[in-house]
Amino acid sequence: MEDIILLLTNIVSIIVLNIFITNIFQSISKNNELKNELQLYEQQAKIQYEYYTSLESKYENSRKIVHDVKNHLQTIENLYEINEHEKAEQYTEDIYKIFDKLGQKYYTTNKVLNIIINDKMQRAENFNISLDCKIGDVNIEFIKDIDVTTIFSNLLDNAIECAKDTFENKVIFLRIDKFNDFIVINITNALEKPPIKDNGNFKSTKKNHNGIGLQNIKRALEKYEGNMRIEYDEKAFKVNIVIPNN
Image (cartoon, rainbow, N blue to C red; front, side, top):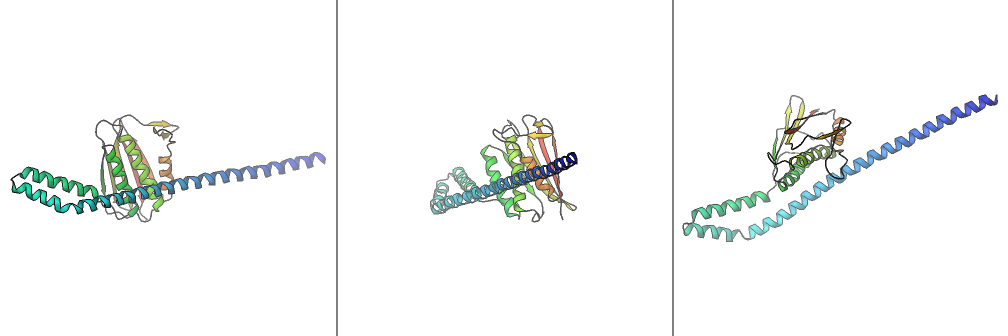
């Protein structure tokens, strides 16, 4: 009888211990999810902050240009009066270029995505990378802003990281369009060397970076039953995403 009681006590203890350990693992898992989600919100907030800071800077610069516009017009007029037509045309072209830089480009009706593209466009230009972006008549309002940030920020950041190390074809192609009942996202960038894979996952080449960008994209896509396919060769890295347009 004592042995049976001891055995039952051990069994109950093991069950209680298993439940306790399971609860600990669930708590750790939930904590990691919350930590990851917090990082994503911080990423989104940082992008929006930098975007509006950039807007403020451009607004101040535009005020300076407008303040001097009378002088610029006078200079152009004087150049024409002395028959310096080429210099006048070049001066006019330079003014146009300044105004182009001050303006914010409009790519899509989705405010968050428009902010992200403008932000990444500026970052790409800093590395002499051309970001060729074409967006069709698509509605992605059903995707939460935090997931829009996760998907497109990571896609473009990864593409810029790859393209900046190339010596030729420093260009990134971003295409978003609708096909039947699906939204199709394609992004392609040039490669200087093949990506590194570890246990089937792509490994980041960035210092002090754990390469969780693509994993976060996959998690975000799962919420909308979307899927991602990656292809690459010696010259290009391509990501294709398909999301049902419910």
